[in-house]
Amino acid sequence: MLPRTLRAARLLVSVSGLAPGAPLDGAVALADALDARRVPATWLVGPRPHPEVAAWATARRRVGDVVLLHGTRPETGGGAKRSGEHTDRGAAAPEARDRRPYRRLPAHEAGLRLTAALRSRDALGLAVDGFAAPGWAVSAGTRAALAAADLGLLVDDAGVHRLGADGAPVRSWRGPVCGAEPRRRRGDPQLVHLALPVGAPLAAAGALVDAALADGATPLGAGELVPRRGPRRPRVAGDPEHWSITA
Image (cartoon, rainbow, N blue to C red; front, top):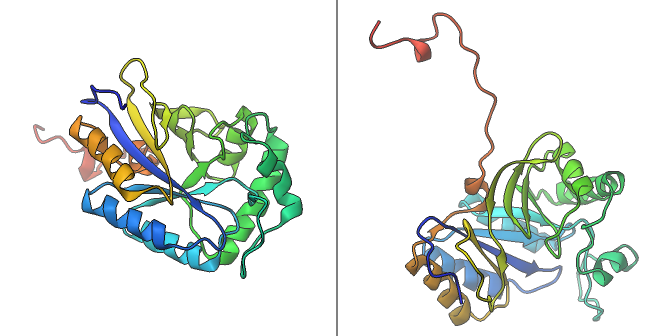
């Protein structure tokens, strides 16, 4: 069950499973269901999506959803390759074997992986807002590499974070990740993060979202939870923004 007291909580809905060659029917149906509830989605897209997936994710980003880079190497399930699928089985093996491949990754290796993943992203014209690791856990080195690559929005197993220049979180909304069958947790988290697979049954996914909304959680996208803040403008004599109305 979801926590019962969510008056101060925020609701984040992330969706994974937009794999290369995967049909988009489930993603479209889930997006429609969330749109009907005025709940933004955070879509997790791998580094080498099919061009059709990349185009669809880009369109969802234009209407206000968030797109996160989901890992830096394609994951495989060991099945046969679909026609048109963009995969690299040699590179995929380490992430496919490890459920939390980024929990101990040093900054140098994380940086190399990110560089290759962002090059693939750029080739497809896919803009992303941040990063979410398969398995959700990330190392301090991974956070440093993300900040260096200007991917300052991170969703992990502890919540949603805006990273500073050194990779340390400077703003966060904290809460556990709840799957399609969330367990009861003690306390009232700041954040209710529903992590749904793209093929989740619509009735079950809708019931989870409706329960959180009924309990008072405010739905927001990951970027809205920890917005990027620009540098403060220096105070300049004569700037009308700083004139006093009582002078």
